Amino acid sequence: MIRTTQRHAAVQDLRAHRESIAAISRSLHLDIQTVRRFAHATSLDQLLAKTAERASVLDAFTPYLHQRWNQGCTDAAALTQELRAHGYTGSDQTVRRYLRPFRGGRSTPPPGPVAPTVREVTGWILRRPDALDAEEQARFKEVLARCPHLSAAAAHVAAFAEMLTGLHGDRLDAWIAAVDADDQPDLHSFITGVRRDHQAVTNGLTLPYSSGPVEGNVNRIKMLKRQMYGRAKFDLLRKRILLAS
Image (cartoon, rainbow, N blue to C red; front, side, top):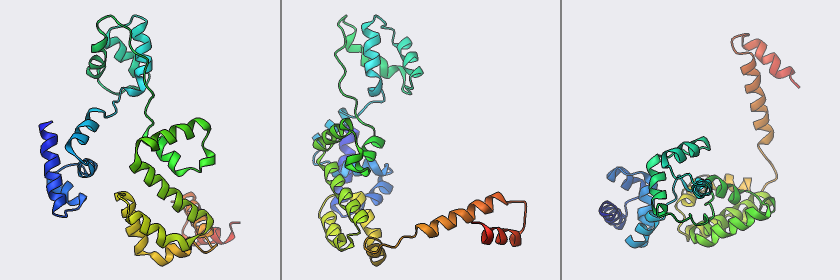
């Protein structure tokens, strides 16, 4: 707790002097994601609460652990070995700490819902809404309801996808302004790249032309080159590229 308090104060002080997240990470020798979490915490209490509620590597295995405990298996070492057979990668101390409150002889409570993985949430954001089944839609709505910051990011991603698929390049400037007004550091980095080549991005979101055929030909040439590596010289490679259908 003391270390968290000190780090939070140091990050907030540097942010007050308009230091970037990357610069603070280098200055304090902290991971950039840790610095971002400390910088965006509205208060120290919020940061400490999130630390206490952080997901555990054991979370995905608690249903099985509860079942085996209620069946009479209370040996933490044996349970750890069983969990490892199911993919658990944590330590036996984590299992022992989790089981300690149940040593009084009572049954374990029913497990709560398993938190979705980052990969799952990312997939829900990037896929079309009608491509999600009923269960995925329900879980996605629950995640967004619990995290307004993620809900805003998902809305921006959906708006950009609509521009991309509908060729609505005329909406790009309004979309950039909306993201600029929001606290979305990762999307701000994306916008920096968009602004760097604004006209090309606008054309890509407006015109019906695509670089797909060019990319396909490049992939075909690379395949032919790999097939002939160490077997022939450039003149034969040139003939194969020109004659390949």
